[in-house]
Length: 342
Image 1 (tube, one colour):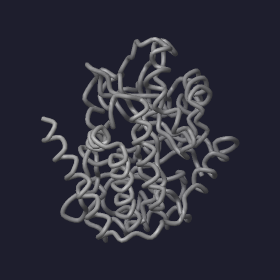
Image 2 (tube, helix red, strand yellow; image 1 turned 180 degrees about the horizontal axis):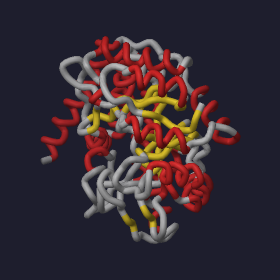
Image 3 (spheres, rainbow, N blue to C red; image 1 turned 180 degrees about the vertical axis):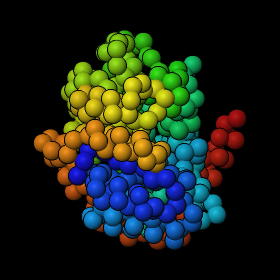
């Protein structure tokens, strides 16, 4: 297996993609809205990709709720943004955590039925005033302890449904004043502030099996490189200060925040300490460039990859109809509470 995760171009696997997966052997694949043409077609795409790889490879998706959900009506329910759980938490801590856990458990049921077993969720980013809205209502709140608590509940719900959670965007995207899909964000906060806020939200979640980096420059830590490409940040902050020892993947290596060729970005991310590189857009030429640059997964990266997959467990039984009813009741209570407080 090679140290990358690959996107796919459309709702069906092309012959060229089939050959690419067979030869390049990415660790996993990730699906997006462009890959979705209904439940049966998506199940077939997932199965075909695994068949081409010749193994039960992990299949990822970004299914958060709110603005970021690749699956939606008419085939799948819509889910609220993370901020909705935070708002309910403020009214009733236990209800907020229960809703976050149950919402994630229901998402896991949707995904498991399709063969998708990894969700890029929860988010532990802590937004601040003036930050770019790319995180915005995706976040659970602005207090690190609350963010960590809700994120832990979301991770538990996914895990209970047999889906692995991916913690993002470590060590924090909440202060970014630019959208890293388009440009490179630069954060000038000092180390003490970052430790007390941004990093503090991730620290209680350090035992999660997978995490995704932030394409953000923290000038107090490394003025030259974003976290994804920074060995000092990966080792001294993500591994040592936060204590994360799971599989570390880059955010999408093709995003506008990064410069250089795809091969150069890929090599820099691996050299910095990312275990695997994520490439999302399904462009074959780019996929081939990434595949040519990444190494075979070995050493500590192989250990972390094996440990991450070993963390997946059998889904606990659930009455989906009753669970969705309970979830809607919890969230309607949150809306009513907000109106009462207005």
